[in-house]
Image (cartoon, rainbow, N blue to C red):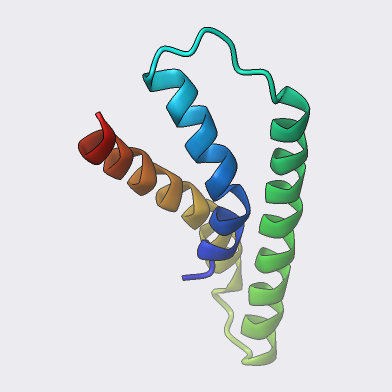
Length: 91
């Protein structure tokens, strides 16, 4: 559930990249905006991971390290699910 926030930051840019990749556009020209969205994704993933780790530590749960990796990695699962959904519906 925590991976939905970083995925929401990249959703629009990901749809542009998928459209240019699969619909045979010759050139994707928004590389600066893509880099900016990547930076926002990294910062958002780090902040959500830190927040969820802090919550786990406040609850005195000793398995906090697995959550810190899983929260950031779950946004990748959302992106994979979106890629499969895009492939099945748009192509």
